[in-house]
Image (cartoon, rainbow, N blue to C red; front, top):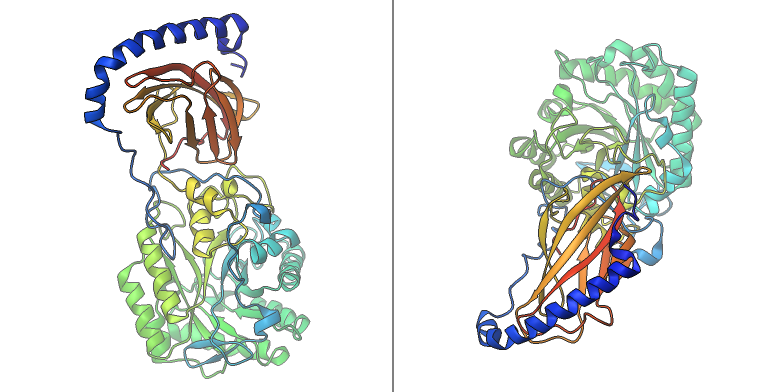
Length: 517
């Protein structure tokens, strides 16, 4: 079905609608006199509840059933940004980092918190390691660190048949792009399916040694020597491995901050606290996934840090530990509040468009930079709000995360004007064409208060909206908001009167929907 299918735009049909509207208004004016007293006693109906004020660290009030977000404009468009947040400390201002007690410190001996994102495996999503995106992470997302995840095992892993030259080249470029973007960068030897870091220790020493030598003069490179030791791996295994790897890095970069994983997928920080490494400038990783790991692990983090252990949350997600499944915004916000209180640095997993809950980019987006609100997943929307990302329009983010109304054909919903009319919108039809989804809305309205001479309807959508057709109204779209106004023949509405045969066609993504405002 094409956008021009709706017959209401022809001259004859428009005339018929005009005549019908005039007749209806004459009848309703007469009826309105009798209804005036009743209408006054009824008063103006109230709209649905407004979206709750944004939580300071995330989206505890986000609609839990909404799909991936939409947007209005490119993230880098400063004209669309609201009041800019100051960018966090970076290598150019904070310099080389070091560890004192439980705290990561900058060159001026001031506490510093790193907050940013991790790539997915460099073998699988190398396209997200690019100069433009890393610059956007800094200026638009408000990050000050990026983590480069190099898997030694798994399919295409560095130590399991992967293209070593290509993987190392991607890693090197990632460090260079991060440096150019004024970001700190964590080189992550992503132990996972290999369980015990000793399994690929020789490859780790060789690669990390070369990287440390190449970037020995950089002040922005940190090293994570094993991601998530697991299975039967003990802290003793990890500690002896760290005692082998750390001197290799320190031979070239004697003051580099080095992070080691902890047993049980980097959750057992208590074991490290009981028997810490005997090196300066080392930290210990804790990983969580908010829908799975909750108060008990938060308590473990708090106890470890308050006991003097320097912890870095080098990986977390707001979904289940599988990297997929449900999202728990309340738990995620509680984690961020605790990490902020403790000045614990944190890195969100992951910078990819993989079809999973932990991916920051929507699987429908094919971009590798220039991301907008529309390109972000639920986790991506949560993260940019948590980071107070200066390059994303706050209003677009608010609408993208607001509760959505049903957008299926036949769905009816209430929308409200700024005057005295109460409007009902119905999705009369929807169809796909050239990769876009078209929605045909028909509107009616009832006037429950004083007579009007003109009217305006503001309809907020979850994403950018483009009008392709409209009838018996004037229509204009700006970003996520569609505004309808009366024509010169249907602006007057008596008390108790109504309006019918108003409508429009818009196009957008398949998840485009009217939202609560």
